[in-house]
Image (tube, rainbow, N blue to C red; front, side):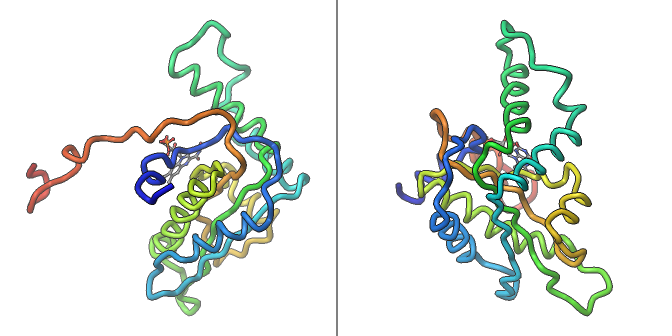
Length: 204
Ligand SMILES: Cc1cc2nc3c(=O)[nH]c(=O)nc-3n(C[C@H](O)[C@H](O)[C@H](O)COP(=O)(O)O)c2cc1C
């Protein structure tokens, strides 16, 4: 797959087979993630690869509890084929069966300014999301499914405590990884003509 095709088909793939992903593949994802740019070439990104079934179960239970209001009491009616119902079914499955996904990666970044009283999270995030997007594209290129999520924010203090993440570290994304189940089409995005301004803000 060439680079442009990977970019055009890098969907958020949430339906993933439970089959384990070989460790070499997970390491290769991190290899490509760490080819990204970072501020001042600081490379302070870190990646927690989680495959342990107990940890995956813990994460699933954390999500199910924290997101209970969004998930609702039960799935939408079987005869409801609206987009909202389909999204709700997909999201419920994604969250409630998160432990069946064979791996997830927490992308993180260490404090670039240890002497600063309070690190600037914007500066830190901007240096971890370059790597995170690289990781997603690498997964696509390797035939793996993945998705950018902020699932850790469902209960970040609990996630920090469970995985031993110090306060000086910012979390970037939670990326589920597995072999895709089913087929996914290309990404659907606005035409570039709607997002380009010429010379001045708002001038088409
Ligand atoms: C910063 C960011 C946060 C996101 N957070 C979540 C999330 O918490 N859960 C989720 O299922 N998807 C999450 N997504 C994925 C978006 O919902 C997804 O990219 C968008 O719906 C478009 O779908 P597509 O990527 O399949 O084309 C996030 C994406 C980004 C860039």
